[in-house]
Length: 293
Image (tube, rainbow, N blue to C red; front, side, top):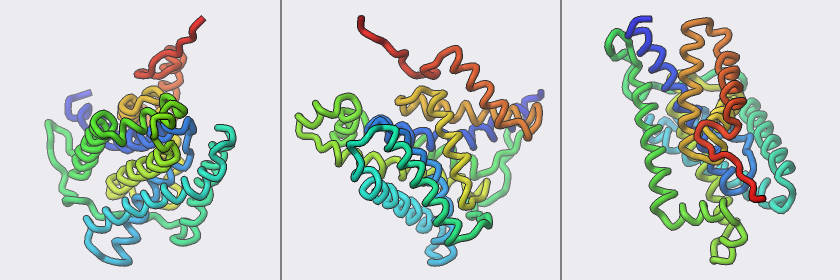
């Protein structure tokens, strides 16, 4: 394999892996606050891309405004989901809460199919489509937007959780909800914020990926599964491990599709993940479980 081919596969893998990483980050934010896996996370990604297309064609406010409106609307969906479906049953078991998220996922997907049909839609690229040559490879300008925005979101999340009172309060709820409540932290408010933040991150992933891969009502299913796989690969509960897991998953897929066959890219990636998890069940960056005896 020459250098140009290697860079081509690497760029393609990092591009799609960035979206997996953002989806995985959304899984982790909610898991760390509530202990549940939100299987509607893929629908947040889908909503980000699809709503941007809808705003672009219905209101015609220009691409930047349509993107911002789509992200804000999806964040609002996250808030509504928490208030209407999670909070009323917040004291039930984790399994029941996970089943609720599956129901929400099916409902959102069905509504989008009824409203916009089964067609696929595309969003204009942020800065043109002329490929950029790099050492024998050609990189789409949208790929640079995806990588740059993903890094920006990760840096913002790191600052939020490590430097802000609100972010630290969310982390406190993830470690010990009862102690956080005794310290005056509203756990319910933190849970609501986690759903909004997760929806925001998912929507950002959707709007930056749609110019490259198009979108439809059902793209969230596979993106959600890939995001969950990335989350497990990086270490459940570790935000930056989840993002790294997404990038690794994307790179595995790209090299699998390029070197063997695109028909087996999903199978190749998941086989490698299974092998890694058999070797390290807590994920690449997760802390191994410990038990005091």
